[in-house]
Length: 263
Length: 91
Image (tube, rainbow over all chains, first blue to last red; front, side, top):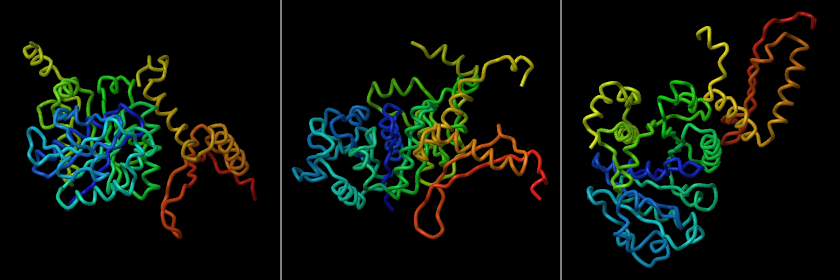
């Protein structure tokens, strides 16, 4: 059975693209056939986070306009042969595609792939409407900040109004040290405010910046964020996995090990 | 909570949470925080006629609930009003 999941947030810069890249790669590591679609027309980014920016020939708009077949536009991942990216167009704008076209495209891809992940642009305009058009489920990414949470709440309302009932939450960029001293809202706080089910929490991890610099998603690696993303993948597949202890790894032992790791 | 905590300022995380809660009520209701505040005060006034309530503990929220008749969800006003004492003067 194949599923279409839109990854959205309302606010920009909370980690939608990073989440899409990592969750997609993680599902591919778990032997699922996955296609990632960058729906942010005009501001394409998923290609560069995945490290596939040099392989783009055709893009989403080309497919929709019939300039090429879907197969021609799909870029195979460097590492995982069952992972594909459909890049966005950089020199067009959001009005180049409409929700009906997106739905048709997604329905076609459904025949061959287990998971279709849609990386949604920020905002609630045309780009958002395109991205959610063909989606069965939604994952909302937020950070524990007032602005991101407020926007997430708006998005939850809009998804409900568009009949997307299965909506889950990722709390991203958690800093447990700040949560501990009361200067950052906790996972529980965010969940209480937004009142939707949690599918994962990802710590603010330097390794994400490093991985993005290199164009290689870190899911499945030994880092805390890598494990958190992998857990999210398992939960998407319906497994019941307990929440990762985000503090555990920051103990004395890790710091001790860290001393030897640097340089 | 330790003794010294009495003198400490409220944690910024809690401040954020409280601000958001109020803000989202008005966002969801599509009316301003002022209007929400007025609704709250009016509720306090009316209920206070009949019983003694904890006005600080009063919590009102606009949420989505499944409606019984029509399909889909509808907004609903939830009020959690802690009662301190039931007066029997209404009789």
